[in-house]
Image (cartoon, rainbow, N blue to C red; front, side, top):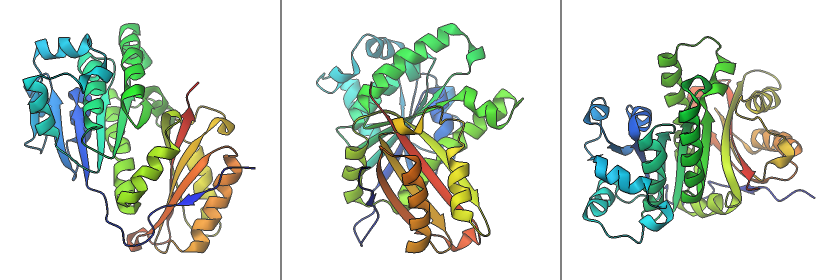
Length: 306
């Protein structure tokens, strides 16, 4: 018997305050055009150049070396004047997204520490991570894997985006364009979650994904007859879903349509439940007249720790 599916976003409860934090060059690029309240943390002032936010923290080489040599789980209990300044820069929010790219020192060593600090400032911390292309070299791959291990332990949910998978969608894409597209893709979860979640839902999401090691994103859209099933099918064709569906332990499903009524959401949910026999599913629907005849399905699938 599959786990029960639980609805989210019901009632008139308060919507959560959301903040996005960019760490390192890739993280700062990801939040550059975001409409959310934001903070940027980097080791180079040049990375701040295109960032809208005035909340900026410039990590010194000495501070980065300290983070490299310190277990992120110990950061919260260590007193440093610069850490207090970092906490003030980030500030509190109900839901904090930390964006970064791994492979370089700032993202690999600073991002897990920032995520750990954010857990003291927020009810739910989600780290969104772009992993390097294979052609970027084995050294960046090794550093990325080290940073990823720490990131898993420092966040309530870790969404990973291997850059190589992007090339499955658009082969021969120039690197600069690929990075720009990835920035837009990584901003989908906070934008969708902002529209449907309540403050009470944050605990439900955190609990459902508590046994997941990493999470992946899939998005599908369709119009016309049978659009519900075709949108689900497209979402499950995500290049980031490179694992058997019976391994998925948790799922967040968001259904968006001009009229996201119970019938529409139920059709999507029934199909998703068949595909994910072992997943704890949390789902929500939202109505958006601007979608016209289009129906969109957003999936976040969590893979359990091994």
